[in-house]
Image 1: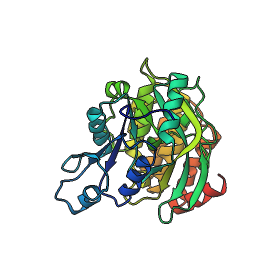
Image 2: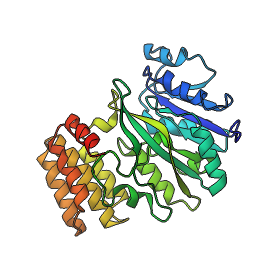
Image 3: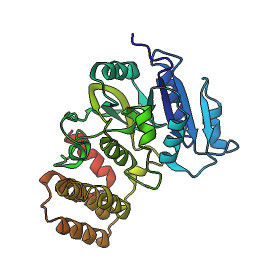
Image 4: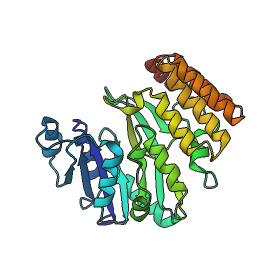
Length: 308
């Protein structure tokens, strides 16, 4: 087995959710007890929710933020604390399958990659029943930029193009040179991967194995929100000048859906103006995803499972 001792740090941001213990268990089941775990608790140590951290039956390093710093700052603190070649990220409600780290270390040694992701299985938060066994259907091609892969001609369904934070293993030096953007309220993971791809040292390998379980529908998940303005601002800043087709497809699939979910006609008009400004027609798939905003989130999740 490839040794991962002393070569990898796992960063787990948490707000004290009880699922933290399951996440840490999955790291300790990777086959090497010497992998360092850094838990960044967005809490004060006296907060009752800190019991989820303090009662862990493992030796872990804990950074308390005092509360209110959010996930991007927490991940940057974890990266700064790493003293290893690699850093991996795990959300406190997700968990890994055995050999996740070993498989990615072996892939990095074989391919020379500095960023690695993998396929996931999506499971329901309430009972961990699997709703999508292998996501995404199509892996990131070596010659395609992450922004194009994620957003251009995005297809409806759970199996669409994706790069989840809890799958990522990144060269620590690269992660320090390109920190997470702490100003963002959403799209933090997409933002980080896209900005990483601009760095000369970026070389990504998307492992075909399912190595992570992503929990959908967790309480407090920002992905359940509908802040169309923050989404549009982010797209205008990072995507509009990069690729007009990617920008238009993103606005059609993501921002328009948020506007419709929140029943904001101002948001719908803002999306239409942004698309018109780009002078590019959206692809069919993103329009279908965007239009799904008129349906409840629960209805969308049911439909995605059907067309997975």
